[in-house]
Image (cartoon, rainbow, N blue to C red; front, side, top):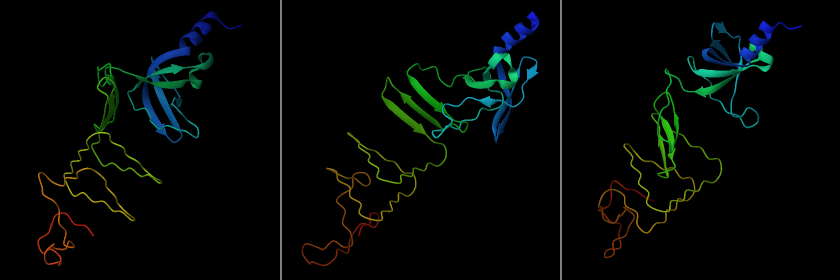
Length: 196
């Protein structure tokens, strides 16, 4: 027969708050400090963990909830996502979905403003193994602080009512354009914009 004190202890351990004390990445496990106890290595909950999988490990000091089957802390699962004094909410905007990263990069969508913002503090790489289509119903503005290079192995085709390279420029003439009068290549042509 289980003593009443033991039943109370197991009930108390079913759901507990704690903070991550230590993180192990292979295999993925955490130790959690809860009250005066520190657990052994426990699983943490991810959104998906099969052929579709997420990887977003907790960090030390993050607040978690422990769900312990039958009140056994050795079998507990740590569930992350609880704000704390150490890690407060990154926004108070009720219309904003926001993902913030340790280096200050952010990904956000404001559904009241219908606006997606991506702010990356480092490099960005997008690799598409097949076709990619970008459709923009209104204007596109691209600002590049350094060199803009496009390497096309086959045919590049840009169709638009007007394409502007630079501010307030005139029509572009390349070194292969023939003069309307002499029928020889133009000597005066763009040194900034080149084309075959």
